[in-house]
Length: 278
Image 1 (tube, helix red, strand yellow):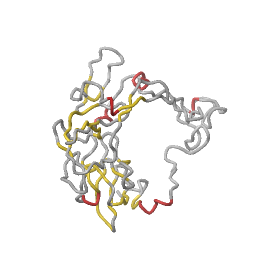
Image 2 (image 1 turned 180 degrees about the vertical axis):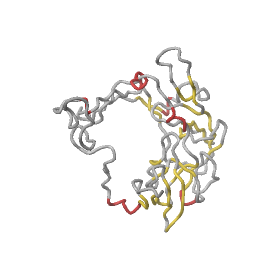
Image 3 (image 1 turned 90 degrees about the vertical axis):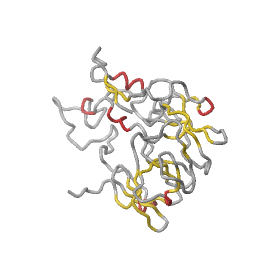
Image 4 (image 1 turned 135 degrees about the vertical axis):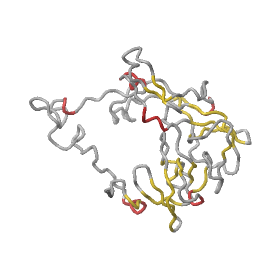
């Protein structure tokens, strides 16, 4: 999909750059594969705000996506590529040989009419899913499982991918977009190709209102507040905070490491924080 530039017919249109979605399905989703979705306003089950800056936004229906791809050896045909308001990637409606319909994440270069299949080992072409241990070294994949049968968790956002870089003792070594290299069990499923809509990051929304349509509210900078409201607040004149960045509750942010999972530390070969050689 290409990017779409608009003429400056108004201040909001000046600089507006969006993804051209003219090639996507024009109608609504398959109703049986959707359910209603309620807004949380960033609140948990006790009504407390746990994610600030979330409110409003356009009404959405959630689309059920097949992240597991466990319908093995049944060929499916791509009926259409659709927009999904719940994610940055596009989704593909697949009709299997037994007439079952399912949504999958659409990879790049997947078109209407293409055949896709999942299995222990299949052809290496976009949209096909198989076990990581059966993939050739160097293959670009997405929707990668971390536990067999749990469903894809890694590389599901627009334009993302993971590369298979080696094998070792029943494990597969993969390189993530962040630079991290890690082991994943060879029985875990993954789908061939990179996720669709790589131009998502190049959009320019042109006005604050578009973020409000997506349910994102503005957040006030800490340095603009009073000391009672934020650790960065107060001071005579404009300041830059005077300390390392923290949250309103004093916890380090912007680069502070929050990972505490010793049980899976052994799966990480190279951290995404490792210094890059020049």
